[in-house]
Image (cartoon, rainbow, N blue to C red; front, side, top):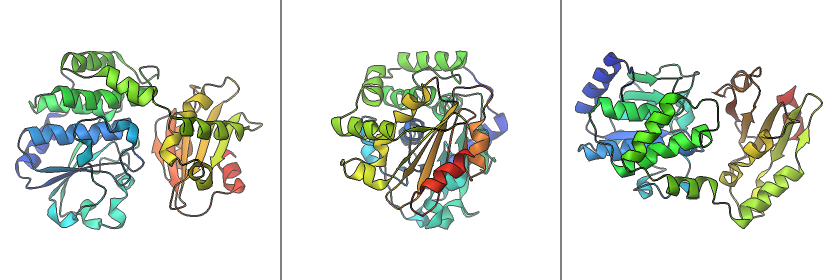
Length: 323
């Protein structure tokens, strides 16, 4: 199944990979299924053709995604001096990897960067760029890229790619699902992708502590006079229940299903005091991406986010967002 990836970018990528001694594949911090699926599929694919590659993410692997093959190889620390090639996946901005704050070489001219993403905010910051906003997920782009590079897509790679598609389409329920998405998913299933494993872990795997946290979030939910469903989650809210911020994943989809909500916002503190905003809407005439961009973030029209560095989450911040 062919997709019109740019031939010039494919050739650039071949040259970069052929001249690479050591590669690091990076996704964005606070990873979602598409980020982890992308970084692990890239690791598995390039390792299979004999390349020296390390998968890395600034934040730890969410436990519900540890079923992906060799996910125990994903690292949070590395020596930037070892790598001459960087593959950045699912990042509308290169700064979303967060590693550059402590290891600036990773985004310098000393390395070659391959940029693979489906977000419309992407600025094509790589030496080779595959930016396709018509694709539902970054893993969907990778499927076409692996075919163009003639890399065999194994059952393990198929499952990682499928996880990204399932995650970013909400199990094919979001409007970014296209005919090509279904065709790619069908072919990945033919190649051995394990849909049962994906759905069990991503969508049917909520423990007691997570559900208790969701209950607290829903109890504190407020709908503004403009129809914005908004809630703030402080560190103490999840830490007292023995949860992490990763346990919030999924509750925003419940909030976004309310007919009373024009759009919804979850503001959550991480362990360092940074505040992450997740924005969702079901309406066609609202642009969450534009709202996120006001605060240095980005994403998609109906699903976006941003991070406010440092500072304790305050009620004034919540109201500032929705004004």
